[in-house]
Length: 144
Ligand SMILES: [Zn+2]
Image 1 (spheres, protein in one colour):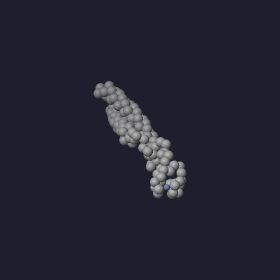
Image 2 (cartoon, protein in one colour; image 1 turned 30 degrees about the horizontal axis):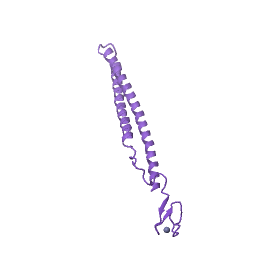
Image 3 (spheres, protein in one colour; image 1 turned 60 degrees about the vertical axis):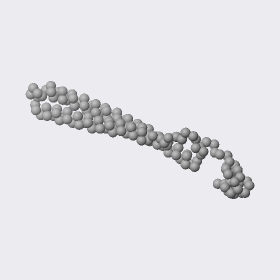
Image 4 (cartoon, helix red, strand yellow; image 1 turned 90 degrees about the horizontal axis):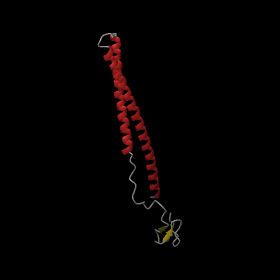
């Protein structure tokens, strides 16, 4: 029983560090995603601005304008992908925050925790035996 409690405690500690790692990775992915999305959207709109500035008047060669449109489209695609990365990171961080919620701690300390009960009851004769004692003082039955 005591060993179970100890291993459960070690497990929830390990889960807590996994949880922290998942949240940190999620936040980093969110940051990368939002930065990439912002970069993609900003570059796409500036490329589109140059397109509307230079291309409708026909002063630029059509190849240049087609290249501008293609560039804007690929930056916009990048922005959508990075938005997806951001959502992924958000999901990861939320999963870390909620799914890895450590098991609720018992309000009362279970008997296995804390100073061990100094006495046990002999299974054979029923007399109280100090739990450190290997054998019952009265009947000699092994206690553990
Ligand atoms: Zn005994």
